[in-house]
Image (cartoon, helix red, strand yellow):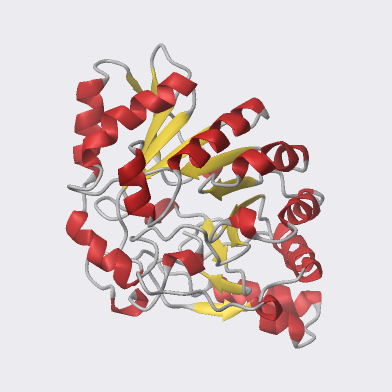
Length: 330
């Protein structure tokens, strides 16, 4: 059975936020005064995670990305990884992290099923990094990157949200940092999720501007890569004579909605169909109401009919201005 939305897109990719707690407070991800009040009883249990992931796998989901918040803060994260990796049909389990705790977990998550990681790092200048993250420790992140490399996790991708007059002057330096470690880097446009994200649009730096900078920095070295369905939204380029690649994600200036194959599940079990739309359904409540597996499948299939053709970031942000990216999982 396949999940096909009203626009003919085959949904094979689920982003699962295992927690909405985070030890960083990046200003584009959450409001300055935002606090997470989620209790243990509100989040999906191990049993509920296995149940819903098995159902998603039966519906054609093959890739489950673990996100947060910061997923390595979730108690039992290694067990969750192991449980998901044991589900037939799920063959790809990447993890998105700020890497603050990655040095501690790299070997364990690799051994239990995580095959690759994306690491958020918006600056390699310690003071600037601390300011962007509101208290983050760059040395811990770099330690985590190196530990992941040593553990054999591959590929490792650095995710950089580019912000005008904040960190746009580091595009070249961050690229060189990735090349020096033979890992990949992706530059991401800011997105208007929540009031923090909407405010950050004043710092918007377009994908076209990013590419121009990269092309000038690496003349005749960027080779466009063919995309795969599970590869995600980035436009990728291998960097000639290096072990690295660079990607650009243009969610606002040149959206990729026509090929969107992903949905999101929050830590509280809410199925979100699009970052730019308010439509969602609580699969946690459905499970806790005693729904059978067949009824849950029907609920998911029905929800997919509400997946929109595209987001409206450039024209309407009212329906998502109350959201917090930290609670959605990106």
